Image (cartoon, rainbow, N blue to C red; front, top):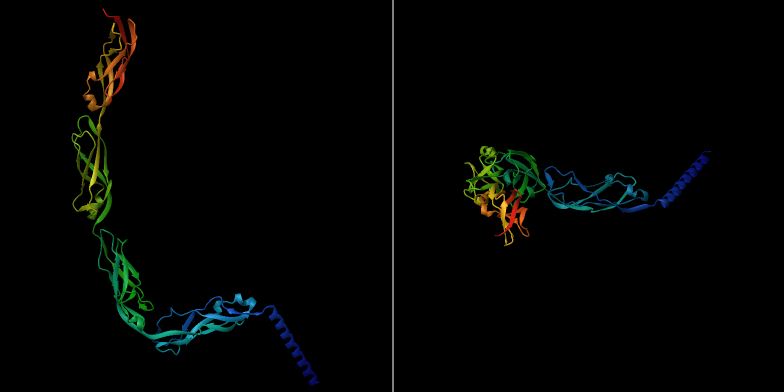
Length: 402
């Protein structure tokens, strides 16, 4: 009985095993394994470095390419986070040598085949520390009119620690300041930069503290602003003329000086421009008139142009009309014997105007003996305008000569 049971169990086990093998073969044929490199590389992590030692640099470590085998339908679902590449520095001593790279995965569906590189060259040095002074350098000074006092820094000395070969090259740490836009006291906590003797920045070391506190007192020594220019014109043009326009170039200037005085200035006047007895435009170069303690940011002259033009007016004159184009065998009389003429124009011309300068005529061409109403024609200097003739028509009596 027992023998029969054993035979049945053996047969059952064999059947299950054969079934599993057949299933595995079928699955393998439908979803074969894929062997290839991971699409992404792994960063190398260092660990277990003994106390008192430090890596000279970890920036040059290569990344690792890993070759794996996994089912084809799973290959692109493999997660990079399930892998790690590390270098165990537990037995490291100062110097440069090759260390093996260890690659591991937590993904059970992945089989690691190989990786590249299998070793990396690392330099291990003693961890060194020294105190270095902090130097403040002002790259760009405060704006014009302000003054920056000597910077204050706390602490004045920082501790630099790192690989011995790097720490030994460092002679100072610097903080560079740009005060070009600062008008108030400058206060900030900034990160200093360790530098070698040649001034180059040194990377790969640690500063303690990582930031320093800097204060730079800034005071306003002079204020500056842009103010308009107001021309000063003195004198009286010639009789009959007037000032009709004043212009200045430039129209504004930048001034600098004692803050209180500068803030109180709303404009700046020019030196006087004299137009006494002027009968035309006057262009003069003058300077700005500034109070004590104030000056121009840029020394310059100002050009003032004063436009002088005649005054305009009008006057009425009594003028006797003249008969023109009368036949030689005829004589004529005009009634009224004088007319009023309203003339307008520049005052200098009006003041010099006499009745003979205005000609009023009655055209008698073709007139027969008798009394005729004739329109008057007026002519005068080109600078003047004849506004009105009153009356506009006169009686012209034509008669034969005796």
